[in-house]
Length: 274
Length: 257
Image 1 (cartoon, rainbow over the protein chains, first blue to last red):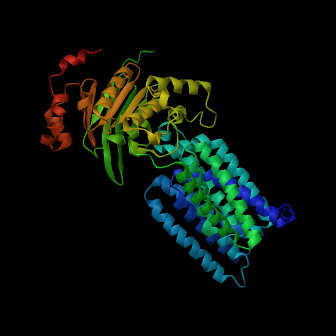
Image 2: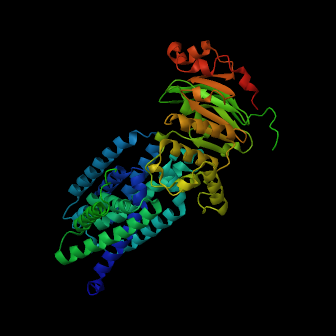
Image 3: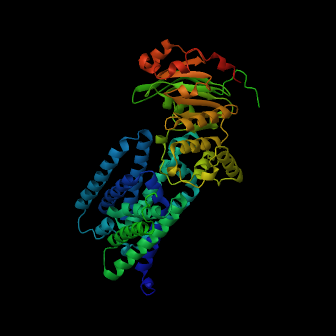
């Protein structure tokens, strides 16, 4: 194992994998508690529009994706603040329109777009060093924000109205959570690709929720679980030449199944009352 | 304790609010005094929860004003209906109650020793201390209701607002709740919203009938004419505990301190 870590691409992959896992663990439990999974799916697909536009303009794809995801997140948060029921419909539209814009611009871009597949399906082994630096910045910003605003985010996820009654800045906190979700998604896209981002935001939380019922511990366990999933998927991907995104997600699915199975074996069904 | 004189703790003045273009609460005025016990009754969809949310500052009125005496605007306790929050959130009884200490000044800081101490004291008062490590999702309706009350009380509220607090309760928990409220009334104003005023018969001082518009009464004043106007179908409602509760015959209880 120490041999493969001497390659720069492998160092980058491990670094991105770990950062992606920490971000998933920090933000995933909030996304699940606030039922923002569908929103996350919409945001990650909106990234495809940004990618297409970036290819067409000839700028760095990651920049285009970040801009589109951030703009969509702000839009959803503002719509939600105005009217709750519209956003579900809007997210579905955003999802499809994002992909359509991407397809259109890629069609308009002459020549071959080499790393398009990497963005769709993820290839953690080919993340360029410059993108690792951007990811590091996003990672630090996300981690710092979650730590600073933790109590506010919990209050909003638990009981939004009560938080308003206590004069907490609920609209700003919700906007903050949405922007952080957007930034996390950009980071995760590099590891597992647009199509699989949702899995990395949900599977570690699902595994952690099987193991603990305390929100703080769920966050820590999600981080640990994410790291295990990412690094094992990465190894499988390297040794067996498998697509890294698929390897990571399937390891995650298997881990969730194993944990659920082990729990069932350990806790026998309640004996009938005597 | 300062004497408030004629100044009410909270004064709602000509407030209107609605959804889409339809007003749900229209031109409502209401004064809540210190130590008052106001019962807000009215049919479903009559705007009861909306009025609470307006007073609590959860939503802003289309028109009209709500004035809070002194710092009472930041010192309101709220006991919502279960459906209004995420009951499956993985949080313990203690942390749930503790979260009531949060406000816009301290939510970026760590909880203080005082926050912890206050939470422990309130949980002990409400017979919840033994359950402090349990998850709120594992509690019975009556227990969860008490946790919500604990969350409201840890902030030392000037007024406590309860939205349909007796709905999910059996008779025993209901009696406990009303005893608890009777004790709290010495320390704070209480506003309870309900479609069934029967359990509160002994406690309330003012009764407000809300069906988009509000009709406000001293205890004992309410007559069947007003009820008919509020509900629009007097017979059914009058058969639903109202006569026993509100119409004449309970004057002697007004002399309670």
